[in-house]
Length: 45
Image (cartoon, rainbow, N blue to C red; front, side):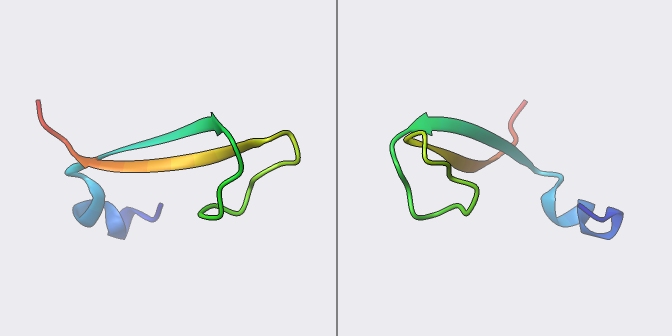
């Protein structure tokens, strides 16, 4: 991420996770029946 984008993203918690199953929402899926899931949630302390 470029530093200029920080004000837009700084209030979010971004989680990238791997899960079982094939998904059509992320392009780095493999043939091992795994896929990536990206979640962005408001950062709350």
